[in-house]
Image (cartoon, rainbow, N blue to C red; front, top):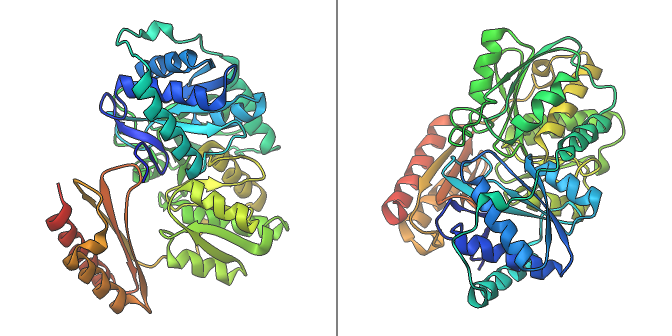
Length: 447
């Protein structure tokens, strides 16, 4: 069982284990040892208050272990993945807790090939972290002033990469609202979208260290949707804290999630003969209505475990050219090694541009099954089948909904939460079973 890594790197409340200074320093030492002496690591971060001290501490550990650091400053996770691969760095590191609140932070590790690490490699790094904690002395006096100078050219390189990946893109003089979530997108999105032909209204682009994801961003897409309605704009686009995912709003102010984005892109790729095996890889959380819409278009869907790296693993196994998550992580492996919210935004805008249709028109036939997700805070993540009342509530839901819905119960890989997802033709049955299961989890494992 992994001690440090979750589904997307190491994540915790900043300053608390495993994001206390001593452990962060040990992570740097461990990564340098794993990469070998003389390696260079590219390092970026989002806008959280804790980012600079974590970056300084991590950099000090890397240097102690024999690695050099190229610092990209505030930049998106997919930008670091791109830079790691382009420049042949030993690895890419991103200090971010993605969609989590500002008090949290994390360390995402990306291989020199631009891809997130396999579980087996993360386990090897965990062993190195344990060794470093045991044999390396640590001083609390590391200063943020020890951070390397920011390589300002990195952001421009990434913007050029995005624009070259989607040549000829235009807003067609439409108006678009961009919500940067007061996160890493603030450093890239305003300049990127200013180069397109149209009216761009940038919101939530004034980070202060505490307001990342606060009532904005991809976890609250209804915020940008409301802004689209208020401004009578053509579309809204919203990112999470490190901009590796995007959510949308159509011209009517309706939220367009990752399932709908994959539907739009899958149909476009199929029409151009670019959808490998006419297959899309989604996750257990994707809606049955999405699966039905794909089927009507002659497209198959495979389901992977939740987590964009698990989606990518399934894509690589099957040769699929499109995959993603309902939450907005969309993968286009022909163009990028990771989910990239800015890339996804450009590609959706490009489909709208070439089709001559609005985003609302492109998703009009998608009819989702009623779906509810109840998040239950838990004190520990024990196997749910070990608790008879929880297991009984899950079985009851599965039995009733076996022909008309789905039951997915899982722990979050990044937070102390149990997620209860119920999908059903009957909204009454959906709510009833979701609350029954959530209640039993609260009783047995709740905070």
